[in-house]
Image (cartoon, rainbow, N blue to C red; front, side, top):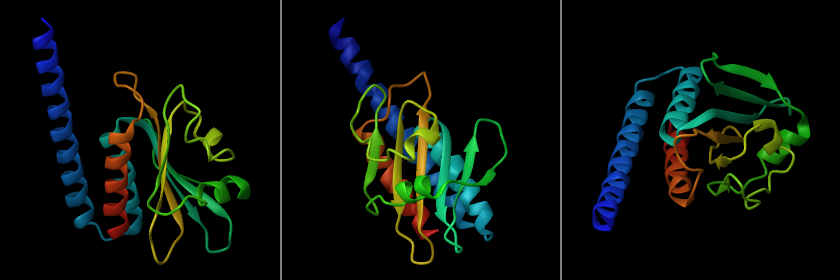
Length: 169
């Protein structure tokens, strides 16, 4: 019985990895043909949520006037743009570019985003600052869906890869 369980668990992990790679490929194709920046952002947020099985995805951007704002995709709601308090924005944009901040459910690790994290209103999250020349922004996903475990190191690697693809778009 234990051999069958171990074999099934390995098969399940392999199937999940293949599905994740397929979603990443779909993301690359989806943003490859998009010309408008709003469409690129919406596709990026949609695919980040789908790939990481999260309730919400958002992009925090340092506005040209210095006022940070967020672009959020949550549930079935349409894409939402809103200004956020300066401290929350500065906190989200303080990450080291390319390094994923991860806060798994039930853990105090990765809680360096003390002003920003509560605005996500979720028990677990990941955030990564994108490396862009023109704009300073951070991509975040939060609220891992109940049917799967919380975010882990494998998810962080996948999220970093998604972020690097998004930065090239």
